Amino acid sequence: MLKLQDVCYSAMGKQILKDINLTFSDEIIVITGANGAGKSTLAKIIMGILKPTSGKIFYNDQDITDFSITERAKMGIAFAFQQPVKFKGLKVLDILRLSSSEKGKSLSTYLSDVGLCAKEYLTRELSGELSGGELKRIEIASVLARKCPITIFDEPEAGIDLWSFSNLVQTFKNFQNQVKGTMILISHQEKMIEIADTIIVMKEGKVEKVGKNHEILPTLSIKSCKGCGGNR
Amino acid sequence: MKQDELLNIVTDNAVFGGAYNIRVNGKLFDRKTNENVDIVSKEGASGIDIFIKDGTVGQTIGIPVVLTSGDIQEVVLNDFHIGKNCDVTIIAGCGIDNCSSCTSQHDGVHTFYVGQNSKVKYIERHYGHGEGSGQKVMNPETVINMEKDSKMEMITTQLEGVDSTVRKTTAHLADGANLVITEKVLTTGEQKATSIFDVDLDGKNSKAKLSSRVVAKDNSYQDFYSDVKGNNDCYAHIECDAIIVNNAKVGSTPKIVANHPDASLVHEATIGKIAGEQLLKLLSLGLDEKEAEDAIIQGFLK
Image: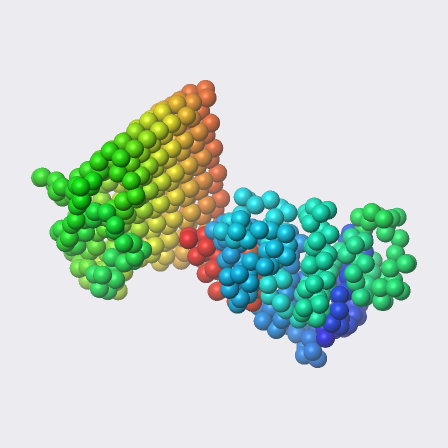
């Protein structure tokens, strides 16, 4: 179980997160809210990419606030970046091998999970020769391959076409059924929010609402929420 | 390091299905020819002439050089006469194991005459080893003459351990000729490497793609010079990417000259440290900083 206690984060004189108190169980949690609400900052703080200005982070009752990214990754926290990273020289197969101890055919299935043909993509370089959407799907595949108990996806829908997006939602459901861990999705998309067990709504660096899907979803006015990108 | 071990590194454990000429410590060690590939020692100079008959297809020809003792300085001239309609792979390269306090140096000038409609893959690897204070110096020079509609792919790699190198490549391309050069160089410590490319696209529809990926670590220094001239309706793309680690320095001096209104020439250069987001991504997969840096550099130079 992951727990954030009184977490605050400031940068360049601006408070970005204020007194965040959250407990994450083994379920699908969607964190939503307008642009600039602090969702991605919160995700980066969980992964250790950013250090909280104050507050504590606990994983299975262990204080991991000062743990490095590597230490958290080894403990079983995985993170899919919103902007996929390009690597000259590293191939898709290389990044999957770095992500997972599985071999060969097993690694290929993570690519098919995100709608890519392994035969076509495994030997491709993770560079500008791939489109933004392809890189994004490979980023997601590299995180799925880790099969971690805590998995964070920062706006997984960004750059993914509509057809692939529907399949991606199903992929997340399947992954959760298999791993049964804590899956945190940062998303504005209605279809993504719909698969949440718990929904967290953030506003101006604070948790505005948190509750079960059936409690929160009816209260969300996605259609009228600027910045949520809803299409209801 | 044993001679066989050095040879295996330089040739990447390749098996020569065709002919070969192995040079060890300044002398011919072993040679094999066949009905399609003849190898003849030059008279009055160190080196060989390699004659590949018209229509030779599928052969891998090896011409590695190793120096396993200090105080050897040699200049070797190797000329490749490749006939028409060939499709061959040539594996060269040089390995120096120098445990002495004297300099070991190999300067190899490889001149290619690539016949009409022929296809050549040329792989060259350089490697230095040895704890002695003696320098390990290699100065490879490649001269490429490409006839009409010929293709050549040159993959040249400096693996590690070379204290000083000047790598010079010149090329002349006739109509429809297509040249692809991929260079990868690693320098560490106080090593110095200079790469010079001088390419003339003389023929109509000739194409050249030159890609240099280098990593300079510690206090090493690398310089890249390219001078590409479009003398006809042609296309060239030059790309220089460099990663610097610690206090290393890298310079890139591109020159592209369009001497014809239909010449299209592109140059790109990127020099910098390992990108922060690349490190973060690999750290998030559980690698520590050293492992992440090594994975990025190995991938970059692979």
